[in-house]
Image (tube, rainbow over all chains, first blue to last red; front, side, top):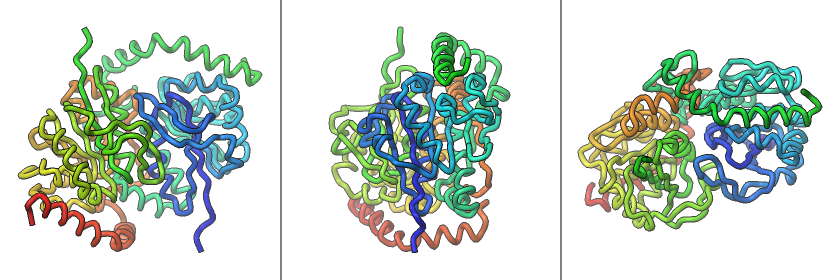
Length: 231
Length: 231
């Protein structure tokens, strides 16, 4: 007898950082019995950061419920957090999901949907300070679990996140088998992946590059929090 | 003055393992001046492994030339290696590209296109033994460079591959900046990503699961090699 379907919903929004989503998708879609819904507010084509286009996305409203909700991030996550019908769908699915999850700044969207109140959560390191706007406690972990909420850090953390979810949902043997199949034995040629290890000049240059966009993004996050009745 | 466009072509085929391509895409599309072409033989919509759909892919034939060609892999790579017009486009673009690259079993397609003769190359560990059919020397490295040919190992190796390419094309500072931005400080919860480190039972189970498909895939690779005038 085959296992019952395990419904996974990836709730995409325009401009998302696609690797936030495709990393976990490659692993989680291999769960035996997984039924994966790549979905968006409008359905159909959706353009991600870098111009990559996903086709035939489902409409979130057409999905009655799911076992696992995963919200990816991107620099446009705070804009998505202000799209009321999108946030409402994330909230609706999240309230009944067995697992409520995100990667990168997707946790800000979970927050805007009122799903992180009183929870510890991960986020991209440069955006983590915005989590308290939504009643969440920022956690610098790469993968953070608090009850049924599992959140990953920035972008590539989605792969470590996926292995953690796999072990929870399908057991460690499944996680290890897929790790072998997707040859996840990372060997970064540099050690610049965290602010704590990056060369100081690299970190400063990165912050300088991000600085012009942050006030607008922070204002969006505050507005999303205000709509929640916070702040 | 802005840098001249650096044309990157990802040559997709139906059924590809999407993370082979989206991992490098997330990094390489951030090269200043990069112009990224997500392309396929027919153009338009293309369905990857796991049902993920990419939309609006360009037609390979419409791209006159590129600076970097990247061919992803997947279990269907050997089938793609038998699609003569696809292989012809890979060959055409590869012959004039400054960098000829692949991730995972994409190296078998480079091989079928006659681009790996006498070269060392990486491949997914379970498929690496097929490289000699195309005159290439299998290299167990996660990222392997031989002249202008840079190849990555299985699936997630595409991220380490991308950082190597970034350092080459844009310098180490760019690579480190993007590593920080995409928070690539991997922390796998298990150490099962290579046959050398995976638990013996996991490795055996994986091989057993792959065994039924391998004879057909190996026959496809031999046929592709025969068309090259080898074997």
